[in-house]
Length: 180
Image 1 (cartoon, one colour):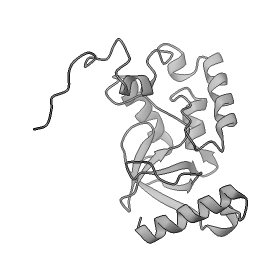
Image 2 (cartoon, rainbow, N blue to C red):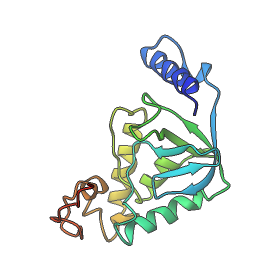
Image 3 (cartoon, rainbow, N blue to C red):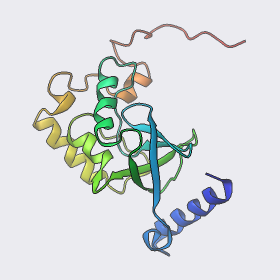
Image 4 (cartoon, rainbow, N blue to C red):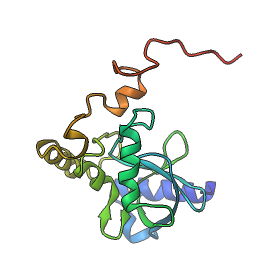
């Protein structure tokens, strides 16, 4: 995304959040043709944009076998070549430059589908448009023991794994080598 386009989107999102203008009425829909899935909550578009799905967190690939399983589930709806519609929230990009979005394959919101089926948990920051909806989906998935709630039950949440707070983390307690 060019700097000018990013600035326009940031302004549109800011105005929409202030109630001064409707983002849906002003912004053309964003689309993405999936080029490659990175894991269970992010992918790359054919145009090179990297997208991180909002309000959900799937296990990391290194959380074997759970991360690979989550990625495989996402691939059911967003295999390479799939055209997706992207919906932005308050913050259009993250600190890594990835587009933050709710992604739709037809009428199915991928973010919600992953949580509803127990392949991801809710993770909220400032983008919270569908937070209540996804919290309800997670509670239902947990109660029904769907996906990972059936056996693994997210004993180590992805955010805790990334922060090295899980007992089954093979690198836990090891010092990371310094780059010199």
